[in-house]
Image (cartoon, rainbow over all chains, first blue to last red; front, side, top):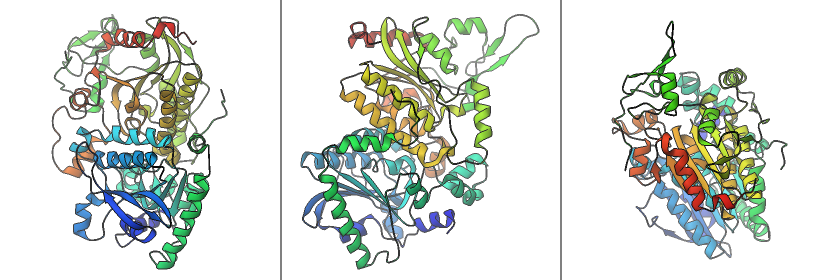
Length: 260
Length: 285
């Protein structure tokens, strides 16, 4: 499949959203709200749940399925308070030694006057800093769109798994084409050039696993994913130098031979 | 006290100011804000600011010359070059143009220096190198500097100028936001100071990583500082943006900077802050 076909597939509103995953992979999910500073962003859902017998904190970017759901969820474009809610829940997870699972699906952080006033850049930057030393395992599943800093703000994790048709990119192909060639219709070319598919991310070492979409959304699909998640969490819980490994994982991207 | 001034330039491109070379005599610069004509030596003596308060964009090395003690700057990691990991169409040419225009190998230069007698690790971003965008070389250098400063117990002072993550290096550019942030955090966890000075423009992935992670955040008057591009926001919200939106003064008002400082008072402010954090005793160089 061409890269841009994957982008379009990743954006389909019929795909399972974060809440579909949350309800299928975990049991007893209790949703928590608010960043304790400004408000509650509905583009990000988070709370606690059971992954089999392990208590976990789960945070997802929710796009919604129907038109009204998508409006309510701001099409999965989080505001600063969404990222701050996520950080609050991650710090809470650290306090209670709960692994964190984030489910990412966003075209990007919300672009608006209010978001800028309330420090969109600062909110993302803070998450990156704090996640880098969060002392519990973090696994991210990228289920659809991984739109730039708005996706990365929940993805500074020990493992990144991507759905077969998920994409992860520094900029949308349309944005890239319009900036570089002043022609948004060249998005397909931009998508190829950006190397944004799951297999590109896997080759670059950014994604650790590609999840087949053969039975996407079926009982078998979730059962297999749940078993994999539980196994991986158990591996990560056993690691004593977790935050050092996380540092080295990100340190390796674009590394030059120039050791101190 | 707020050094605010009415900003009149219509767009980003105008902020540089036109320079005119008369047939005889000294080179002159026209201020894009008040349209005054300044002799180059006059602007230089005011650290490239106009009498009206406008701050001209300046290069990374010139800035370090203004802000560090004479002869104290010693460059680090200067051999790291921008690379083209994706063989992105047209990027090779853009890089060679950027090198010619700026005389630099990447969009940031760095090293150690003294600021008012206080030692620090410093970095300064270069607008003439692809508008200070962050590629893998940029992220690598910033990370190396924080690792160096951590190993030598030095504070970091950094001047940011950036259009954001560099799209021609794809996902690996995005990963530099994570990498640099992790390095800032490790430096911070050692109890070491990090001061950022936001200069025109600081946007996108750099705002959403190391620019906003300083313990103390200073900003130059009138600089554009924000996350999303103005045009993107206008298209999203379909309305005119308020005056002064995404400027240093705007982020100060909303609580995301500690102070707006004129370039003329900048060095003294930074050295005072360094001294209050044990600056001169902390001679790690």
